[in-house]
Length: 99
View 1 (cartoon, one colour):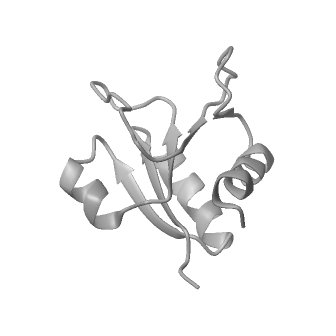
View 2 (cartoon, rainbow, N blue to C red; view 1 turned 90 degrees about the horizontal axis):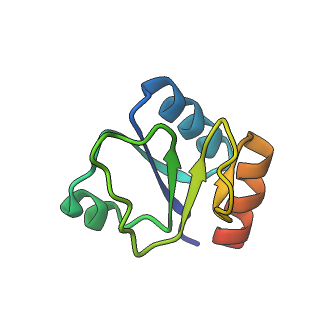
């Protein structure tokens, strides 16, 4: 069976690395990205889900066709894709990826 692919995007290197390590421990294939990915990079990796780490890179517009999870240290009102902790991230990854 194919391992689920997760693309982790953010502007803070430590946050992206922390989330990427967490996803690797869940046996997911991970592509950490520090900045704004090109469409070609997204197409090549073809992630099943994006994990967007706040703060997002300046100028990044998440017009993403695939599911995404927004990881923020503070809750964002009304965003159902928002998580604030590793345990919430784990639950959302399981829901989105059905693993």
